[in-house]
Length: 357
Image (cartoon, rainbow, N blue to C red; front, side, top):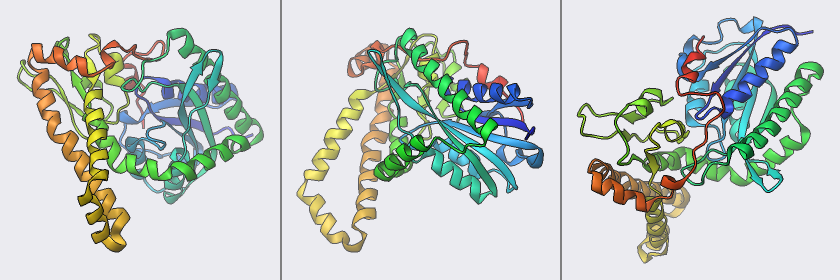
């Protein structure tokens, strides 16, 4: 039996994917392997894979925009070339309606990471898809603790079953889940591409700190991609840079529940985009673009939404630094009323402890 060590690199915002990485490691240890989990934010990818022949590597990431997070894509792209083997796991946004738990959709995520690993000479031995509680609290409230744990319990069963089947019988993936994700990949690949190219940057500019913020700095300190800037002036609130991953760590772990998402600005963008698509000038542009219609149109919409969101964001940020105006801003978002999600027994500093190469 294969007894190689197992090292699982993971990207996790609120702890869902970390739990899956831990379950994979536990299943490996049950079968006599040494295993550990490593947060991607604690290592330089160029220094990884040093013991390729004696190790089976795992790469676990949440689903963002029907794909893998850009941060994980970048991490895998910077790995050194090695002849090695890996497993890839994705957490999907599981939902609970009454007694029913519905699966999320990963679509292109696992397939994209497996492709990038192959370019590095790393063969993917198995793909895993795991449903965990949806934590996108910029758009919907988190589940109650009981509902979240019910979804997570199902996710744990899925993880242990899929990982056990692979370790014991060499199964590469569940046939049903593979077909399910291939179908969604074909349907949602354009959406995933637009999200990676434009959408994630625009969503990054929805976050702000409201009047409850006391500049404790935890959001900036523990942001996994360093996207939150805390100005030196004690009178200024933190602001979010365009490479924020919307992983929800800042929103979920803020002790004052001060991090909000400006849903009102999102509504403005949707209305503005609709007006753009209906404007006669847009059709004139589309006709002029000729053979470049699709890429030119996507570029025009991307530039337009970047201007619509990016420029006003600094107005929103400036307003957030004036207490009365910061209170008014919360009338433009529902997140001030939303429950936050965080994995049990997980703190902001937990991820930094999963260090290694």
